[in-house]
Length: 450
Image (cartoon, rainbow, N blue to C red; front, side, top):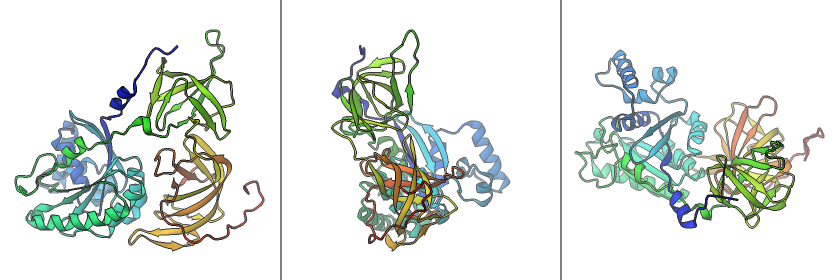
């Protein structure tokens, strides 16, 4: 018998989160790392020994003031070159909210790194040098944010001190970017004029830009709404482990453990196990060893079902009235992250939540040109940092949501079966218009022809 009960009203209140995941992006030398360093420094989230190391490194370079960019440029190669290569993750907190940030590279050759950093972000800060305005890489980052369905985008117009803090410079850049990002479908755009080096409008309001009446970057990060109505989500539980202790104390216990990817599950609810399609009812929910009546994302729980049905790792438990269709044909937009190309006819492994199946790349209908969002039809392959459409045939049916509906259960990765290398990150559904359909090449008869 469950001992904990949560009403719908209480659940809605619990949906408000105190954690914000956000990423920074921008062209090389736009000041991403300096902005992040300024956020950490001015919000007093830097340990004394970290600041001392930065001051020492800055003095060795001949700088009179600490170079706050070094707080995030952790790799030795980055410090020597003065650029960000890898995705630098940092955790910090203020009294109002906790943050996990990803400082992503700005150079075009590291587009895949931005995809990695922004894939789990609820907000992306895109920096623009006030002297240069919106450039090709700015449009590229806006397109990636739109592709990844990042709900909030902040345009940080940096280095305002180098254009004499002119309001018209900021207004022109904000208008151009807002129009472009709006056409891409970015739902919310907030423009903020800043000087990361001087600290203007980063944590504290600028004394030199009194024409700007909006929030500082930190104030916006602390107050941007990232909550959602958990009762309205498509409930999904990927099964990670089947628990059968078979002890004298629990001779008949059979639970299905995993982290809830989306939505809410309640005791007594009818559920369907995919891809088999078998149905049952939730007999109980265990959370941290205690029975509860309701559980929601992102809690890790164990579901107990009324019926003893065949459920294993990789299966997906969903409400019976809200089950996604299963299919062996996956059509998606992917970002290729490996150094080796992805080619038509290639044999891969597809990992979706906790399920991994064999698959074949049947078609690559198009490759996206991020500069102008045009489609290059039938490229034949995708190379590192390419984004394109693929059609994949899997050996077993999968239950994928559209990425637009669920970033967790609408995403997957393609893996090289030879060495386990991640080849591409995929987003299911019609993210971009398809090129004309073409006949799929025949696969060799070696057990991979599905």
